[in-house]
Length: 223
Ligand code: CTP
Ligand code: CA
Image (cartoon, rainbow, N blue to C red; front, top):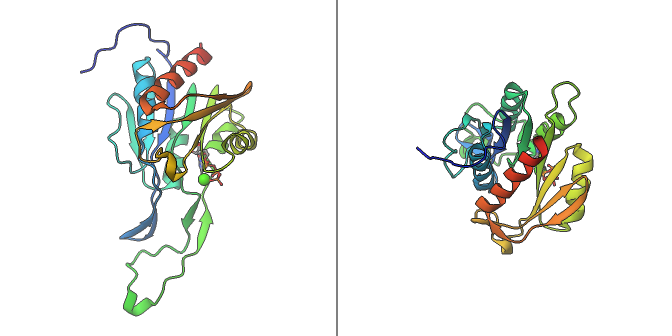
């Protein structure tokens, strides 16, 4: 049991967090995935819980354990994540930290593909729903604050600023995930927070410190 003392700025608030990668099946034994560990989303959920929020944590198959004290909904695919998010609404805030697969294999097989019989496989893809954009553009039960993440390798601020406008969310937490930064899979993060007031560059710090600062900002915004 963890004891938290001090103010609980998010007491009485429901915050939805998506986290981790998604897995998109090719056949019953194979899937397409990405390198998200789930570390930043998990750290954020932990910080939100410490600040008093009730957190629904919709997570793909992550490397790290989900935070204790969250209502955890474990999913595999982007479509399942989409459905779980909508089932969890309404929320006061929704933070989309998951690395959602942009495409699913539309030609997925319910039988294992065999190399001898089937030759080289040719995969066909379909685009997954954009979960963040869907929630950000809701007209009835839109959370008061909708936050997206943007993992980029080039022109981070410009891409993230464009992404915020395109998706209709309030904030974007952008970071540079070029391999040389070590951020993907590492314990530190260096983010640029894009809000309605512009871009703020935060110094490089632990993912837990990024989470604490973000939870604080969310608390200030929801009062
Ligand atoms: N996102 C989502 N559903 C998707 C794709 C992305 O909810 N199908 C969310 C992510 O959780 C993240 C934000 O959208 O908060 C940005 O994801 P990103 O992959 O950077 O954006 P895309 O629009 O997919 O653009 P890109 O072509 O750069 O991948
Ligand atoms: Ca994407």
